[in-house]
Image (cartoon, rainbow over all chains, first blue to last red; front, side):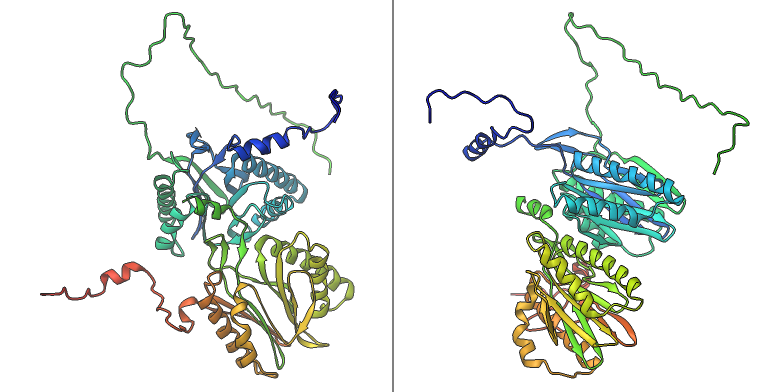
Length: 273
Length: 236
């Protein structure tokens, strides 16, 4: 080893120089910074007219709650929704990606999307990444072939079930489903059972919390009940309010929503086939 | 608590007991229904016997993801092959396709399979395709973690040229024996019987299976035992 070591000029691509140092630090006990995970309780069940999906709304970064009211029920198609547990970035990215693929497919075929299509797209993507895309999903929807509910695991395996739970709170929620689920539930009974299962996860699992989101999908219709239940309200709010030092300038925030301008052209050219 | 969380993120594997048995006129495939992630049962009613063609079915064990994707690929290849051939695929072709995929990807796949079916040339046939991608044509074969407990049983009880009834009873008895002893197998017993007349799927719920040595009766719910008459309190 020569005494004079000139550092090589920077080359393109990823520099692996620090990997050994990171490994040494980890061995010494330094924990790497954690990514945003959804601790999560997500559930789904099939009732007599369709499927109901439910989720809690807490996003955690290690022991800290990063988002108290995040949305875990993702839109896939007008008749298909997907709850996601695991790394928040992975669930968002994979559901967005498959949602766009489904839309293109709808334009291509001219038909309503089927749940098995979404299922196959998701499972092939996750399998090809061999479990490194950490997304555990509960996919539910109603299409021409009927109501469907599937669970998809990060490694790409799928199950088709009448009721399903995923996430860190899945054991608590599954306990509720196993004791109270039966075939042919009505809409109100189903929503009540889903809310109960999510609450069980919220109160008994540290990784889940805040509010309950519910989504009811039936033939030709879907109801996204955002914050269906708020069982964790902020109980004490100080009446005195917050005082700022004289130096701080408190500005008023006003949000003006942009109006969507839609021009309807009368008597335009007919689209050519 | 932590170990449970690690378990929930563990890869979905099918502990499993799978069996394939030939009889005089066809084959009987049998499997349990438990899919576990670590120590948690992810699906207690899974269907491990998947259809490849009208007359050929496959029993899957090992990694759930790997076996599902492999079956999907082979189903696709067989569909093309059937169209090109102009007649139903033979069990031998199906088994060889499974073997090719399994062997060529042996470094990346972790799945043991049993292919069984009926065709007009050879009749009922069973092929075992364990981990490395070997192809073995056998009169009967067992696989999965629960199969360890069945080797002696089959050595004792197996005979050539059974009837359909005998074969089905043998398969159900064997799977329930394995369920009794193997923690990674459980749930219900599913069987698929394939012969010249077609395919027959049967389903045996857990509480109809015979109880073995020191097993307790299955209870529907602990709440039932509360309503039952409680024993008289001891009076000194």
